[in-house]
Amino acid sequence: SYEVTQPPSVSVSPGQTASISCSGDKLINKYACWYQQKPGQSPVLVIYQDNKRPSGIPERFSGSNSGNTATLTISGTQAMDEADYYCQAWDSRIVVFGGGTKLTVL
Amino acid sequence: EVQVVESGGGLVKPGGSLRLSCAASGFTFSSYTMNWVRQAPGKGLEWVSSISSSNTYIYYADSMEGRFTISRDNAKNSLDLQMNSLRAEDTAVYYCGRGTITMVRGVIRHWYFDLWGRGTLVTVSS
Image (cartoon, rainbow over all chains, first blue to last red):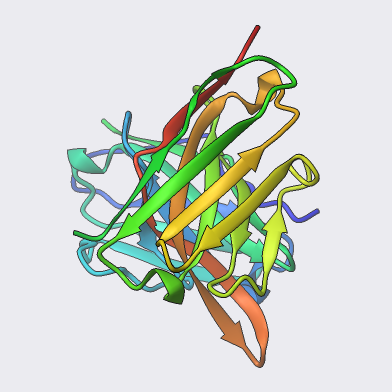
């Protein structure tokens, strides 16, 4: 079955750019999306269809997908962006989530 | 207000059954896919099941196939998940999610969740 892999953790300094990767076989042939989940809260969609932002999501969130890797980029990272981030893709008849990446803003 | 609200969680013994419900409001329920995603304590998100807007497509994760049944009632704006033969490893917060699909040349290329509920906790323990 299809799998996508994320690094368990990423650290970034406030104001810097954070990049979170999501790797899967020929992921470029699928669309990727990303969810943000803060402690004790439900997930929130931040990127869909590789690089589209839902309304209400700040412009500092962007996404890309190339080859075997999709990337979530947060420019000018703020303390409020500290959260778990999950990538997700669709493969044939199943929804696939990555294991999640804990973003720490130091 | 656009929202989905889950209910029906609780404590159940191994081998038992539970039925979760999700009430939707503030949007045209019949135009969206509906989905269940769960999260075990301290763990990541795990997809459970999805159903398309008119019941054309129904999918389950392998570990739930045969034990869980998803259903929807577009007239009542409601989504259900019937869970049978529950195991300790089914213990999790179960989220209801509104979904959108992207079709390319008649094939589903993207299925994502743009609205989530607060979740309902299911605990399977003796």
